[in-house]
Length: 213
Image (cartoon, rainbow, N blue to C red; front, side, top):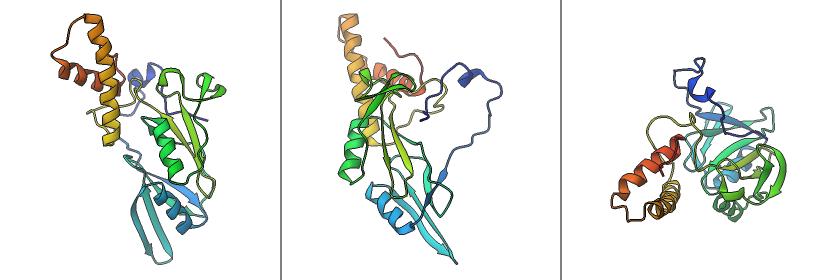
């Protein structure tokens, strides 16, 4: 299993890194039955972007909730694909939602020695970012991996602070609230300028910078 985490100083200082934006837009998922695959992913709550025919060719595209990357269903393409990551802010809620929609999802698990030393049931201690996983497959055996990410590593996100959904923003606010409560305990007084503290915390959390105390 791979991981979306990027570690090391080369993420921000390596001069070989490209400077022209190349945003991953679409990946092709090999399927044997377009209608069956379409029904499966729509059943997971994924948005249907396109379903049209051009002669003998049919194009079907769907997008996971809150994702900026979509999938094309590729009839009889080589496969199945494995280790395709879906990043979530609350892995237990994400797993419960998929199960409710009929998907067969593994238990949530983590590794005793990150990244891959010894698989253990349950979420990672303290819900450490990048530490908790769950998996499921579509009817063609394409394997998806849920990974819980709440704080990005440096270099992983650049530009404006954005949230993919109301749920992601809500979860970020809850984490900021909890951290701010600890901040007020440390300073011993009520922090009247809490909006500024929340804002700094949320921006730095998403960009992977050192969080405020």
